[in-house]
Length: 283
Ligand code: PEP
Ligand code: MN
Image (cartoon, rainbow, N blue to C red; front, side):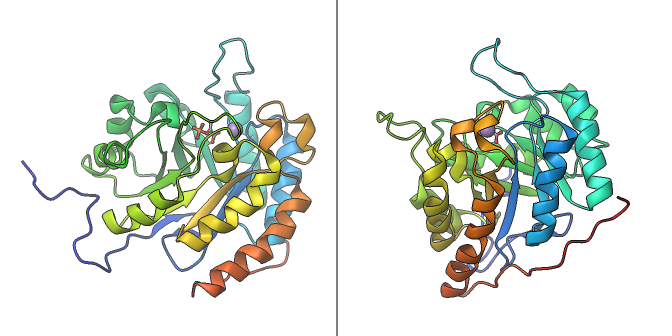
């Protein structure tokens, strides 16, 4: 039995950098992943992608298979969404991240994505985690709805111990008694995880708060507390989002937030996001 866990730091400065396309999670850069809750159409994703390129973000998100509380809610466009993500990836040169909920979906998504997302509801789907441990793509692992940090890290351990070292942790808020916000963003967990593991940690202020107005302030707080990146839900027309409309921010809001993220990053001694001109490939 291995007594040293894979997620543990071997020395105080031990850090893992996980590369997803041009993003380096765990490096001094604050990496911003953004995109809609669900892929709804090519036009929708293309508009988001154009903005991300303009702003110098390298990674787009978008759900193809949606884990919805009700089986009657929109479940995602599935295979069609994967095709759209793949086209955006090819045409725009953005890395693609999407959630998979089963071993079957890993195979379905494999050719189309750069990083698999494990959602909160599947954080302890151990068979899924073990399968992801055998893949050679990075995995973004979201904290379970009411998972302790020990449970969160042991979920990561399932992936790491199978040989896949490319794990990014994501704090996305935990359940509480108070319905005032969708979840409670556990910022102390980010700082604590930095002590406990060498893995990169990002924060999702969208699912953590569930409210568009709270996304920018909590995103900034996450960077201040040491997050290596952010995952933010955006939509060209937020009120018309098919899923999670209340928490989606506009592309304009994202644009105005990024310089503030840079400012906080600089204030705590991290490099700012490098801006680059829009580069359109093959369109
Ligand atoms: C998501 O990021 O699309 C999502 C469903 O988030 P979570 O698993 O954190 O609820
Ligand atoms: Mn969502």
